Length: 50
Image 1 (cartoon, rainbow, N blue to C red):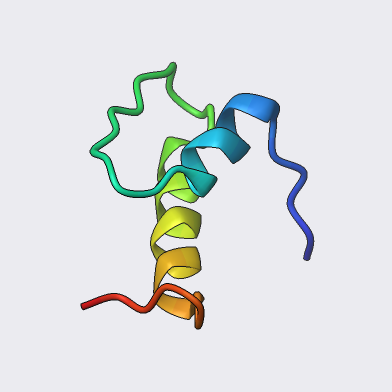
Image 2: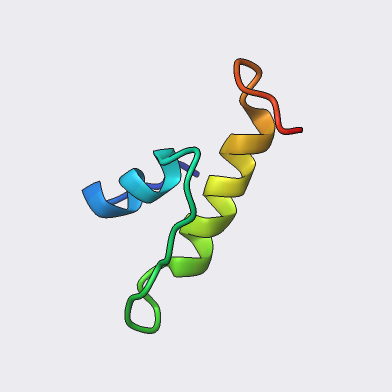
């Protein structure tokens, strides 16, 4: 199932090399965004996780 992220959510998912804070209302997708961010980092063959 493909997820359609908002511009702000996609920015959080794509941001690298810095810490982030995700603050939003209940049910806005914070957990899904953070899980996607972690998966993207783990699966990125061009920039492997140490």
